Amino acid sequence: MYGEIIIGINMVFNYAILSFANRMAKSQTTSKRLLLASFVGAFPVTLFPNSPLAIVIAFLGMVICAFGISFKAWKGPSILVLIGALFAGGVLTVFTDRFMFSNAKATVFVCALVAYISLYLLKTKWLDVRTARQMSSYSFDSVLSIWGGTTQIQVFIDTGNRCVEPLTGEAVHFISFEAVESIIPKELIEPLHTWNTKDMHQLSKIPKQYQKNARLIRLQTVQGASWAVGFKFDQWVIGKGSELPTGYIVLTKEDNRYPEGAAAILHASALESITEERGTDHVA
Image (cartoon, rainbow, N blue to C red; front, side, top):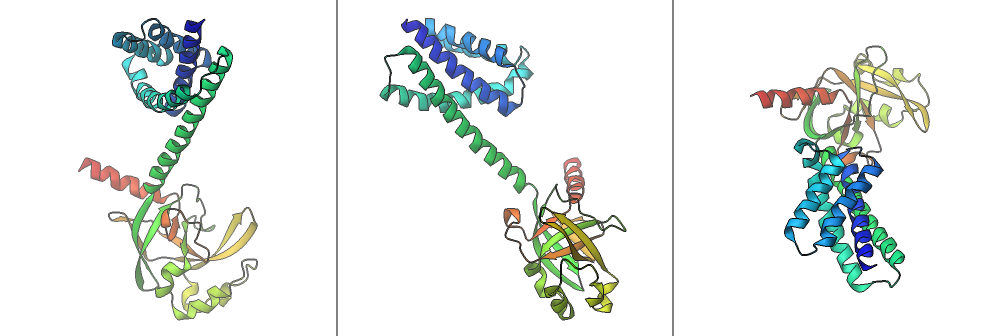
């Protein structure tokens, strides 16, 4: 009976870490295969609990059974299995040392619950770090030239921003009013402050010398449709010298939702400029 409990606990633990590795590595292994692999990993260490060789055989048998026989198939997931085992194993060891139940089923159930909760927390934290890393890779320094002035701005490329100027199809970027306030011509300050987002017939309020490079931009958000004025910029250089194609900027008053402390949200097409730059650096 004791041996069955140990095998059950080991199987539950193995299944938890294999499921964790399967999701993180996106291997798409079936539950039945993971269950079989968890038994393959549990049986040898139960028979020979103090044997390092049994541990190695159990580990290799488990990951090969779960993810495939080729080294390429199980190399990545096996690292995740080790990470999950170290983390969940530490939590489980502390728990079982302090709380052990006389009922075998209760012991297996509680161990399973503890293992899954600990690995769920690890997965959540891991994904948060991965997301933060990906987001930081879309954040860049930039230099914007418009209205005869130049300013440095921290920008973020938003792959969800597909807004374009309807007549030319050129990209529309969103930028904090405060970030460019120092170079905004005085004649534009008042019209921009009094701009009514619900009224499209306002371009005449823009001083004539700036109307040539101004366009009405229709914005569609969850709050509904609105109108903004877009201004064509002279030049916008991001990263290590990548120049954005011709486009427009829309000034926003609320920039507290901009990610990574950015002052501007670039159109998704800006990613192509950065990708070309990185490709050139790689070739060089």
